[in-house]
Image (tube, rainbow, N blue to C red; front, top):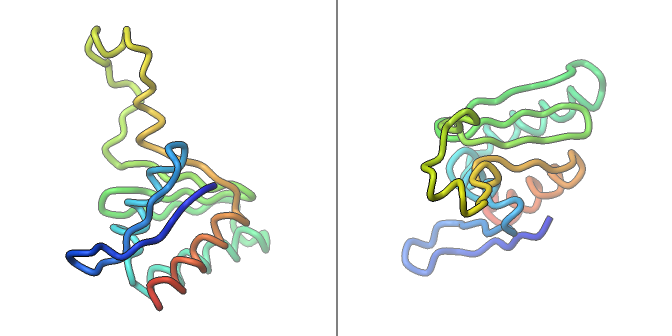
Length: 124
């Protein structure tokens, strides 16, 4: 998973840029986690509960994105995502996979490293 953290030149806010395959994680970090120590702690605690076997799966619904944690796997999906949506014929013929822009998955270890890096970057 390739990513880069930057500070917006105008607002000074923290931004996260990800490779195309994982691009949903950037806005999720910015919107749902931001600089919230409480949100970060909630997610890290959920990871610990899953890895210790106390929980099989945890879903953390946010305003715009939901996070689903299961043993070894993390999935972030836009709340507005509807896999049954029918694309206009012209777009469907182009073969563009719009679904890949609404969700991203990664491994639990990479995700924990990402969260700790984000916390260090935003100094939460």
